[in-house]
Length: 86
Image 1 (cartoon, rainbow, N blue to C red):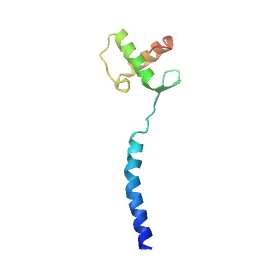
Image 2 (spheres, one colour):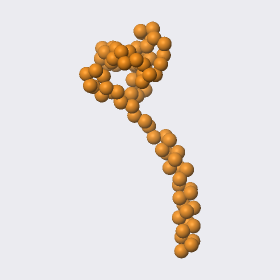
Image 3 (spheres, one colour):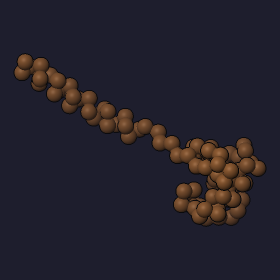
Image 4 (spheres, rainbow, N blue to C red):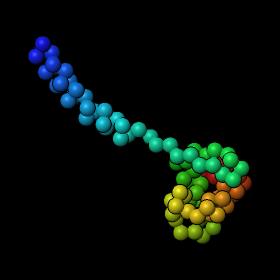
């Protein structure tokens, strides 16, 4: 019985670090809604489009979620006219 318990504890100790690493690598999904309540997943393509928008509008780069509401709103309007913007 003691051997079984020790084996289980050793197994748990070996598996725990792998589970922690797997959890750290899990992708995070961010979703945003524009004024028309359309849901957008923020991914690499959306990030490239955001950077292109900033470049076209001569804005200093900042993360989308930190931008003012009006800038976000203007971005979604711009994005509707540039659906394939990389």
